Length: 293
Image 1 (cartoon, one colour):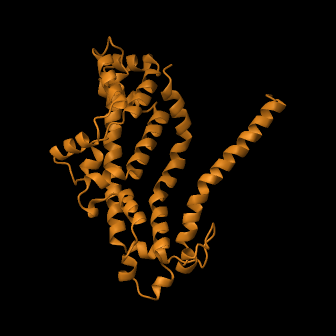
Image 2 (image 1 turned 180 degrees about the horizontal axis):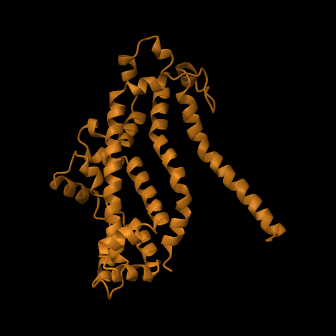
Image 3 (image 1 turned 90 degrees about the vertical axis):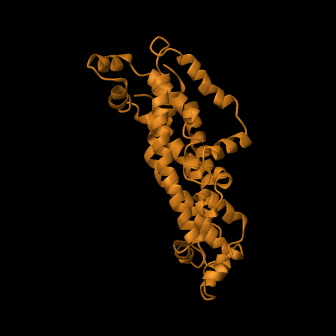
């Protein structure tokens, strides 16, 4: 049986304490926002709410469920998240599979790999990026949020290194059985690449869900804003719809601060649900895809 030395045991204890403390520090702001969202208007405005709701109420969430701007932004983000994740994963898989081949099997492979790398080292700039999207007619459409960043080069590099670490006998056996490159990718490479695929899927999901700056630049109408772009405008401007849409009796339970807190928490909730299902693959995918074996 493996026995830990006293120094190793001390290191692990200190490590657990430090990481637990960092985890708590990261969770406290989210807990505070959640507590404010479930509190009534008075204590929230008076800054009396810390990590537990004061005068518990669901009024802020009831108000949000009837807030058309929030619901519209949520629908736009769901479209972006669905289209963006599917398109990005398909293109990343195809690019990584091709670039994982040796120069003898794919002529010009090194040149194409360097072209991909140059996009990380050099950026065309914000204005040329905007002009290119405008000239292609994607401005103020969902495609402007999906197509320009459909291929994340970091994800391609991570996946191609994972592919290059797989036994070549798998691919050779598939070719002997008459499989094409596409069949080999779908039936051989993808099933054995769950850790790497889960990792880049998580990266893609988080990117599309949390991105807000491109929505502000590429959407001419606030009605087309994705959720995070909408939340950015909400947090910087006072929400006057509370006065126009709520009765005076309801204003005691819902305020600008409780409404914003509820919207921010709902905006973060899907990622909080998605991450635990992919987390067990996360570290393994990063390690295996970072270094070519």
